[in-house]
Image 1 (cartoon, one colour):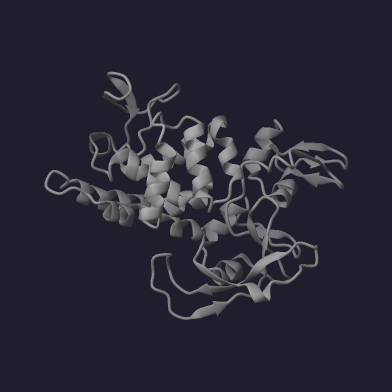
Image 2 (cartoon, one colour):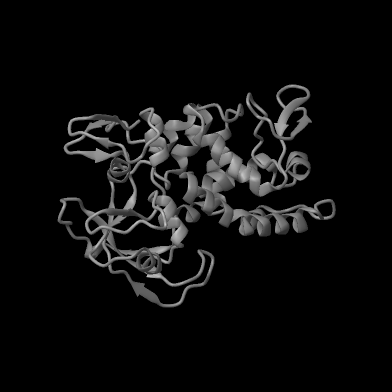
Length: 325
């Protein structure tokens, strides 16, 4: 909440003088890049796509809709919206758009808009670094009527080097390919990482800190590590320069949970569903939905919803079929 307030305050100070000075694209990116990265962390949408859409839809925050309604993504009211509204002409006369108290709320609602609609679900099968696939997918799913919408997003991303922010889901890293090894479970780790020290992704970093864990690529395109004996949340968070809240949220952990040797810990948010190649599984032993969520890299809340369940700790006997997408 504190960060959202600071971003909103900064935006207000800048956009409040918009009558005298137009915001440039580089200024817009500087204001909103961290918010876009945070949205990528929380919802799995590439930061480059979020920034490019914000730039395009709001005219760098200079549009009337952005200045008067804090709506940076051109999201219309749609059925079920019970918040404030803003009326202006668009494809039709007097169309209803969503209005927000501050632009940070617009960024959050943009993420919820994409994650909450089935027509955009295939986008979340793409890698975070596939901005071209995301741009084309948004156009195909009907986000905008402009036939050149995908090309416009791609052009903005490439001209402004926005793809660099897709490489920062938790911290910039240098991958040493020569140190790739085989894990005991047969999966190939992405590599050991030399994590650069710093307090945020925008710092200038000095020195390198060698990590103690191999980082693996999950079949659901997620980065994770395997817990060693004696590991704690604090140690892992410090090793990868993450916040404790990120570890808890990404892994559906609670503050009273204790790490167990051999289990997965994700360094990025889990997916809303499994890949198309893995639509369901049959449990090979007694498991809970919480176990399956962690093994399959699917958010616990989404997994429960897919299976019409509410109890994450319900024990499923061996042979139970579980829907993953």
